[in-house]
Length: 272
Ligand code: SF4
Image (cartoon, rainbow, N blue to C red; front, side, top):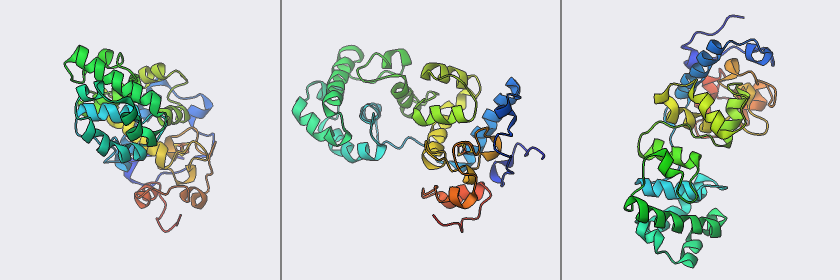
């Protein structure tokens, strides 16, 4: 079976037998892994040309607040509460002076509203006290803010300030592990190891593409391996999910389904 050409991201991929990938057999070189990681990124770029943060925002402060609220809930749920929230609290000072009960009431649909209200008030106070009410750009500064970890900091830096960053969330952790790009389990180590494989200028987009693929195809339970455009490059092909094209295609239900199935070499006549 011959290897696909590097530009094969737009053409149907051949399939390997599950477990037959060199990386699954421990036979991949370090250079081979780097090349494969970058090929995966290029394939994902074709699949998700418009991959972007799905939280609605128009300023760095709004993105910071939305990202803090997105813990333990969906972006859709956050986007439902933020129009009212952003209108009521347009500045860091407004959060610093917020009435806790009123703030909690607005963000209640996102869950954990007491803790999140505390984070937002603390965030407003810290921004006013230390950064003149502005959101800092440095990673070292962002991670000192209440409710802001490395993941949130990279989301804000990448999407509001254009600073490259790898956002290691649960989707990202699951997918890079399935691809055999790292054996690390600690998010910071994962970030550093993937940073060594992917070009820096691609970090933010790569993160977003990986997250989109995790949401659409490479599900935590029963990934759609038989309908996956990365099957050739994935050492976990068929390990956790079905390789049957129809069964797998039924697990891809996003609006861009036809496009994704076509890239996986399936005709979009396979209905969900
Ligand atoms: S869906 Fe299957 S083949 Fe595709 S990336 Fe996930 S584990 Fe690999």
